[in-house]
Image (cartoon, rainbow, N blue to C red; front, side, top):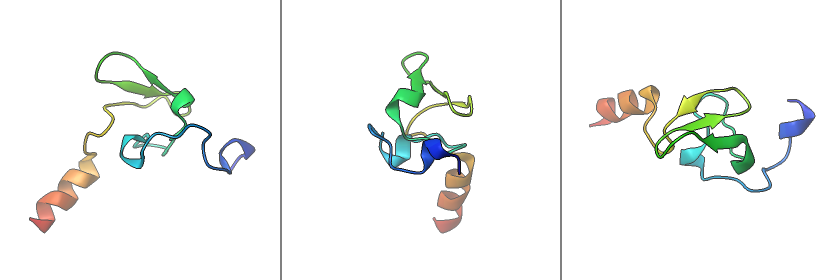
Length: 64
């Protein structure tokens, strides 16, 4: 890891709202684009916080 992400974020979001691509949780690095979407400034992934990822949907379907 680089020196920027070796410690807990100063102002973290909940784990389910973290970036699904890189796991970023620092609220200052997650920028709201509109009422539903956030862009991670670390990896530039755009996502909906709290929405299931494709892996979560498959896991949920197989356990039902």
